[in-house]
Length: 180
Image (tube, rainbow, N blue to C red; front, side, top):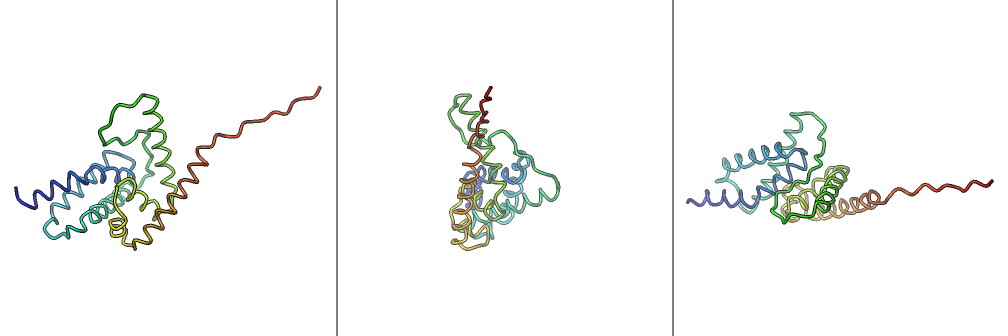
């Protein structure tokens, strides 16, 4: 096999799942996310010879984000979050109640991530969904590494606050005893 072919296969194996998770975060639809990632790899095959291999991950996620934004503009619709957990990794079968709790938690977290400001949401997705490091996020978002840290820190802090508020049960209704 040739070196470009090997690089393409290694890149596909390493980044396909993180890119699908990332695109799914933008589209809310797994099939649309897969289509977007397929477009990313078609574009990669066309530009593989001219790409700086040190900047491959940021390039992939930038192209993926742009394709997802194009998809959103094309469909001009509100994206409804799926209630199913995107399960791309092989895992042992959890107990049914654990699986349901995991799906509910993932859905709640996705909804809370959507409430973050755009730049924070993007940085959080790239870090925790796509698994990029700060340098790769910096290149993908075209900002400084320090700003990436700031965005992630404030995004996570906001998520924590929102999660704690979301996780608190409603205060019980207190009835005053009726005096006869």
